[in-house]
Image (cartoon, rainbow, N blue to C red; front, side, top):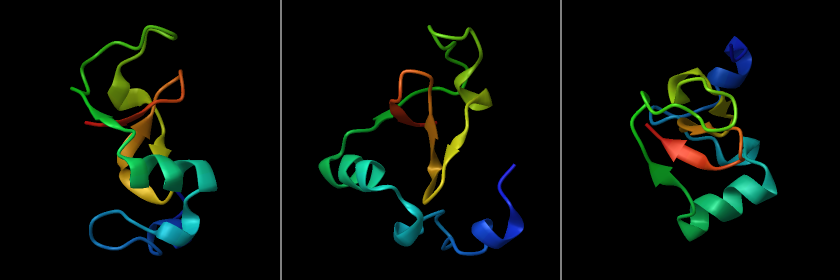
Length: 72
């Protein structure tokens, strides 16, 4: 769960550029994220993509076990 104070720093679309890591900011700028269904099963852990953590600074993305950023 994301603490309330961090969630409130995001805009209506789930973006807060100041909270992104340099690597995540670079990935977003370069379009290095992909779309997928939340019902996809992660090859690393066997859990659904829905169950992976959100990216702080871009709450519309999930980080799966291999480090990829996925928009569900």
